[in-house]
Length: 266
Ligand SMILES: Nc1ncnc2c1ncn2[C@@H]1O[C@H](COP(=O)(O)OP(=O)(O)OP(=O)(O)O)[C@@H](O)[C@H]1O
Ligand SMILES: [Mg+2]
Image (tube, rainbow, N blue to C red; front, top):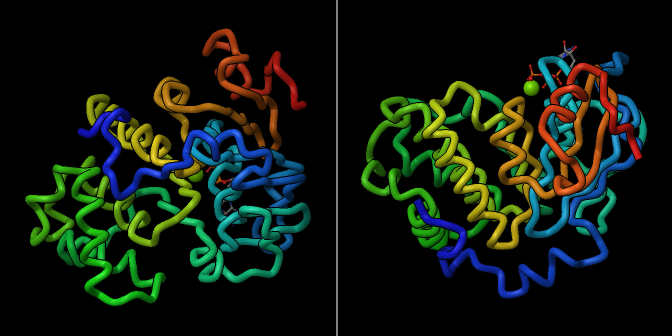
C-alpha cells in the first residue's frame, strides 16, 4: 500500500497544501433537509469538506448518513437547504451533471459488476468523462498505483475478488471519473480490521493528493484516524460537529451517537 508520503505523481496536486487552506470549502452543505418523497429524515444538517481534507459523517444505523450523501449526489429529495460544490450551487443540477462537476460516490455495499473484469469495472467508472478510451487506459495506471492488489487482477471477474479488493475496486471506479470530492459510504463495512486499515491508508493517500473526502462511517476509530473534521448525526440531526483535534476522546463521539452528545451543534 502506498503511504501518504509517496503519492502517485499523477494524482499529486501541486497546490494541495495551499488548497486545504482555501477560504472556500470544496463542498458546503447548509441547513439540509432531505428524505424520500414527502418523508423528511434529515433536518438542518450543515458541514463542509475542504480541499485535501476528510470530513467524517458519523452516526449509528438509520441516523441519516446515506440519505445525506444521496441528497448531495442529487439522488433523493432535498426539501430545503443548499449544497455547493466549489462555489457552484447544485440546486436543480441532475445527478449525472454533478458527477461531471466533480462529485464521486461509492455507495454502500460495494457496487461493482461482479461478472465483469476488474479492468472493465474501472473503465465503466470513467465513461462520465466523455474522453477517449485510450485516455481512460492511462488513468487505469493511477488506480493500479494506488491499489497494487488490483494490478495483477485486471482480467479477473470482480466477483472473484476478496471483500477488501472489491471495496478498493469500487473506490477505483469512482476515481476513474476524476472527482474533486469523493463520498465514501461505509467503506469499512464487513471488512476485517487489517483490510479496513488498508482502505483507510488509501483515504490518507487520496487526501494528500488534494482530493476532498466525505467519509460516512459507523466505525468511529477508523474514521477518526483519517478525519480532519467530524460531524455526528443522530436521528437525522447533527448532534456534534467540529475539527477532530478539538474532541478530547472518542467516548464523547460515541455518546453523541445516542443523542447524549456533550458537544452540541455549533
Ligand atoms: N428509500 C427509503 N424510503 C423511506 N425511508 C427510508 C428509505 N431509505 C432509508 N429510509 C429511512 O431513513 C432513515 C435514515 O436512513 P439512512 O439509510 O440514511 O441511515 P444511515 O445513517 O445511512 O444508516 P446505516 O448506518 O444503517 O446505513 C431511516 O429511518 C430509514 O429507515
Ligand atoms: Mg447508510
